[in-house]
Image 1 (cartoon, one colour):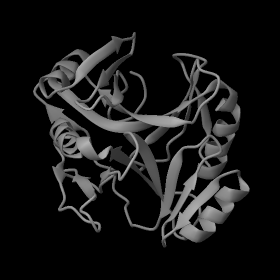
Image 2 (cartoon, rainbow, N blue to C red; image 1 turned 180 degrees about the horizontal axis):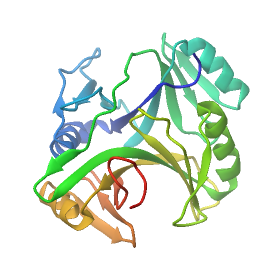
Image 3 (cartoon, rainbow, N blue to C red; image 1 turned 90 degrees about the vertical axis):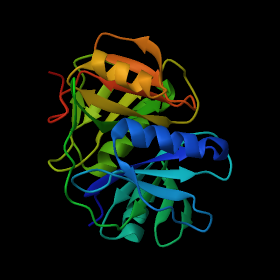
Length: 247
């Protein structure tokens, strides 16, 4: 199998912000942190109460905070060769294969098994779930990057009801993370990514995040942009945590 049966989002932290970043994301999701692994204890997994993990953390040796994706497939090498044919660039093969998309977003093909999507977490004022990765794409790269991710995943494109600068790829049943592509106002630069939450009560969820150390950056009609204690942007949205769709 060369199309992904699971997607994991990695929160990659600059070295100095790793401990604080992991503390915040564990608290805000209510997910426990696994024992650290790797030669320098640079990796860990956020463990949901139910279902299989889909969020992991990494302390970077250099560079700023970022998001990268792990695409779970039956044959990482074969999947990587196919991705290269679609325009990706290979970075390294460690048994798992590290690549960059045509626009520069880092992703990996891995073979770890996972199958059960976790449900939303219930809070006193509602429920919420990290359930979407938004790819932030400079305008000149938007069309090419959109075609690349559509063809790589095999997921159908969907127009956004919010803006012509957004479109999503229809998540198959059971997958933990949706993919949304956003066309940025800037013309050039590398593609990056941020995480989005679905919420049943965005106002109450915002208050909960702020109490844990987040800051509100801007409030839009159906989503709110926040930053974590390290300055990493993410969004709370009015999408339904069960379906991922706007209510």
